[in-house]
Structure formats: structure tokens, C-alpha cells
Length: 168
Image 1 (spheres, rainbow, N blue to C red):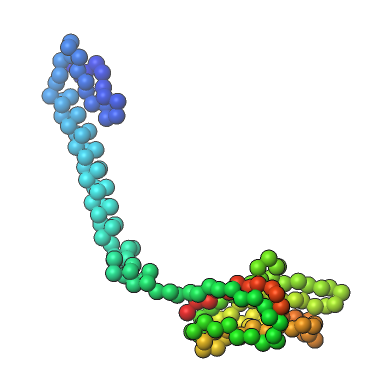
Image 2 (image 1 turned 120 degrees about the vertical axis):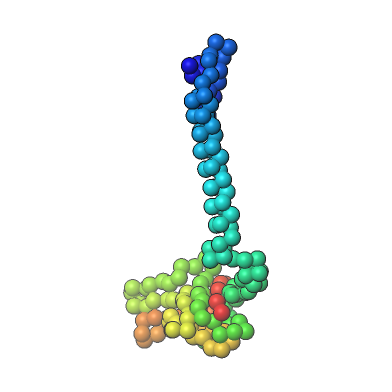
């Protein structure tokens, strides 16, 4: 006769004084235990294979190389009101953005038919209005008055603080 009680997790036989153990009960318990340990061993092997997979994970040397690279630079500048201004980065940026601190990216004055642009993007494929790139950084434009095109660059407005981020 099988046991009158079972263990909580694997439901293994837990015999009492009046129970009569049978060989089939022991075999069934051994199969349950073997199945659980086999699953644990397979999970451990899967984890070891995953960790060793260099296509999914960087090796230590690769990680150090990656972490050692400074692929981007961030900074701030305060507008000085000059019509043209160069922001030196020390490299030709592939992509970047400029935006004002505490100011919307642009303002539209419907009555004056003017769009004041306070932010923009730049890349090797082209730049938004009022920004251009060169071999050592980017250039910004500030217009004090409305332009005939209806777009007024405010990327260097006097006293306004701007943030930029650029990638190599």
C-alpha cells in the first residue's frame, strides 16, 4: 500500500507506522526526484551556454573597449545675440540636437506670420533651420527680427541657456 501522507512539494511517499511500502512506490518517488534534478541540471547548462555565448554577450575586453569610448558629448551655452556662432566640439558630428532650457522648441506668432525656432537637429545628411555642421563642431544662427521666409532662428538668443548633445 502506498503511504498515507505525501511530502508537500513533490508529493513523495511519507510512510506512517501502519503503511506497507512497495517497490513501485520507491521507484515512482525516484522518478520524481530524478525529473526535478534533471530539470535543474538542464537549466544550469542552459544558463552556462547563454553566459558563454559571445554573440549575445560582450566579452570582458569588448565591454572595456565599448565603455572606454566617448561617443557623444553634451554641453551648454548661453546665447550672446551674435548673428552667427560656432560651437566647437573637436570633431565633425554625425548627429546632434540643440534645445533651450525652459523654453518651448518653437513659437508661432500668427499675427506676424512668424515661426521662432529655438531648437534644432544636425546630421551629416542635413540640418534643420539655423544650424550647420563642419569638421570641428556646429554653427548656429540668431535673427533678431522676423525673416521674409517666416522662420526666425533663435538658437543664440541673448541670455537664453541652451543644451546640446552631439555624437561622433
